[in-house]
Amino acid sequence: MNEDVTVATKASAVSIVYLEVCSCAIEEELYVEPGAGMSLSAESGKPYNELNFGSIPIRERKILSVVVVNASRETVSLRQEGPLDPGGAFSVLNPYQSILPGESHRVLLEFAPTGVWKFFEMLSIRTDRAKVRVALTGDGISPSVDVEPTELLESGLDFGSRRAGESTEKTFQVSNSSTFELRYDVRVNGTMRRNLGGHLPFYCVPASGVIAPEEKQDVKVIFAPDACAPLLEAQISVEVPNQTKGLVIRCSGRCWEKDAYLCGTDPGNELRTDEEEDPIMSSDEASVTGREETLQLTLQGPVCPGQSAEREVSVGCVSGGGGVDYTASELMEAESMAGWRVEHGSGSVSAGEEKKILFKFECPTEPVVGSMMYFGLGGWSEARVAVTLAEKQGTTRRVVIIAKIYTQPSSGAEEEGGGGGEEPAADAK
Image (cartoon, one colour):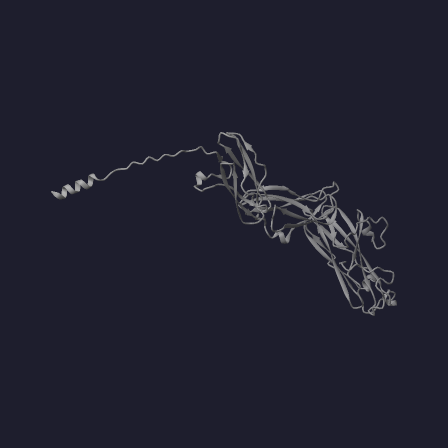
């Protein structure tokens, strides 16, 4: 009984204390509006807002904005708390200004990465009584673009031989393995002979474009010459901003007036019409219609008795032609005795095909009586070979090749260029 009384007495001694907590809430004076790339602190749970510029190629630039709102009942003046890194990737493009109550100010920010890494910087904008913090983030990346098939960077594009006024095309692909779209330009470089109309014989379609991430795009290279040239060359370069490797495709092509052509003679050798009667032309050859073209073929020299030199010329038929039969005339007896030989002087070539005619000179160990070396002098030895090109579509013409080489006695006493001749250039082939 006494225990019960005691328990009741203790229970009645417990008291309850009530506390009243009073606080006041003030309206936010400065805040940032949602926008492109913006992650607000209220959404992310971070003590700051975040503006993400994403991935940008190095030395490119991207501009985003932060809209700061004045939620107070007074006009406030904005200012920046501490400067951004002057050598960094982020910068403020416009000045801060005063904002009326309920109005806003748009701050323009630029991201221009200077390297391939992640960038982070804190921007603090404040008034006398409030402040907002915005973390600026972005990634600097390098573009990844290539040409397919990749072998073209080594082998190039050969358009073969075409008739003047005809065109042909080949295609390659530009691939973008980057995670962002890329703008590219295709440029035709290199010194080359222009068409009669002033345009380049090589051009590309399209000349520029935009490729989506992980996509490819076809580019056509068109060869459209309108003037004869034994060799036309160009370099096609694919250029994208800040690329780390060069993408260059070498292009070559040839242009001829007719289906049949002959090439491989001296560079810069102009075709010319020979109006006078050729003393070595037979009566059958004289009946061949069409103009006569004269080309020069200089073999590498000088050569001494017992030495030899050779050089090839090519007979071909343009792509799309009907084929060509060719025949080289026989050498005169004096030319053969001087050491000249012509091999593979006749045959047929199909459209797009070429065959070789070999000109060879073997300097006799015993000088030919009456030659310059017979008198101990150096001089030129020449041979004239007429090549008849008969197109299967009916046109026949004749090309005279003047093959020459400088010879000199084995004693070497004769000075180069002696005997009234001019020694051929070292690169003549």
